[in-house]
Every structure is written in C-alpha cells, then in structure tokens.
Length: 78
Image (cartoon, rainbow, N blue to C red; front, side, top):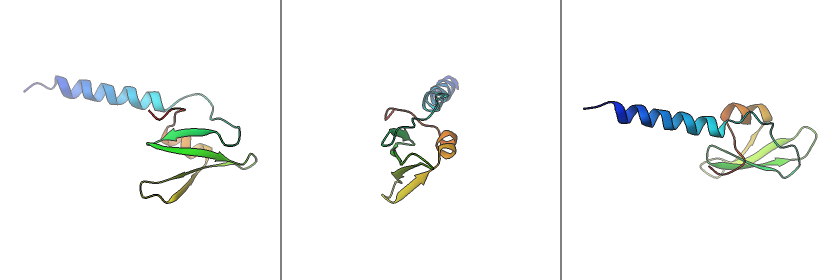
C-alpha cells in the first residue's frame, strides 16, 4: 500500500489552511462579513468592535479580532 495519497491529502489541507489564514488586515467597516470555520461573522460597532456569529448549534458567538486571526478567516465562504 502506497503512502502517496496520504501525502497529497496532507498537502491539500495545508493549502486550504494557508488560504483561509490571511495576512491581510481584518475589515474595519461596521457590518463587514468574514468567514471562519464554515461560519460567517459580522462586525458589530466600530469602537471596541466584536465579530458576531453563531456556532454549530445556532448559539450566539462573539470573537475579537485576535481570536479571528488565530482561528483563520477569509472574505469568502471557502
């Protein structure tokens, strides 16, 4: 049994992760939308802003800029 498919699957996962984790700055305009972990997050407010979204069970979830950067984000759903 060859391990080649496992390596290519690993490489494609790495490419997806690098695509969702962007070095660009998060948007700062109120009501901006970004995606992280398959969920959309909307920027609420301007001063002391936070990102609002929902988890897998539909419960409200709020993230800071730092948390979003750590989780990885993108401007499109994937």
